[in-house]
Amino acid sequence: MASSLYVYLARLDKKGMKVIGALPFGQKVYATKVVDIEKLNLKPELSAKIAKEAYENRMMYELYLESADSFEDLKRSLRKRGYSSLPMSQFTGFELATSVNKNALVTESSTMLRRNSDTKR
Picture 1: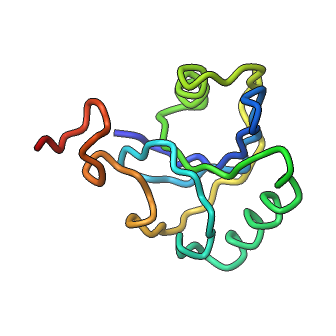
Picture 2: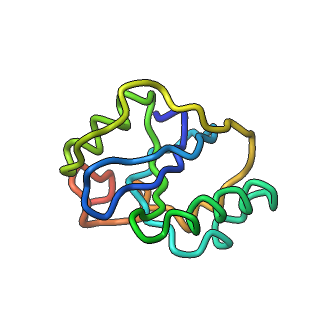
Picture 3: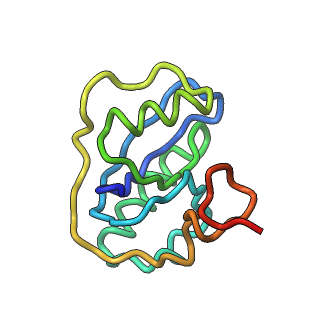
């Protein structure tokens, strides 16, 4: 069970990433590209901060959400997907308690085609 939902910007050329912050979250969430931040139903101040970061970096980065037990686990997941030049140390982003719209995330039970998914058909 993952303990944090990381909000990060992944470079389009897969040569790096920037972590914006982490939210406490109890479910496994696969890398979910966020197009509309409003669908996440976050607190307004948190949503505004994430939107600002995404807008300022829109030419080279895409916004993602993904759960991981630790920052090292997040980096391992990104490496498996072909990312390089990842930060060496823990991020300095925010950690706020908030709720997230689970319907906007890709979880184990929300897709049947994902490998190792609990849902089989």
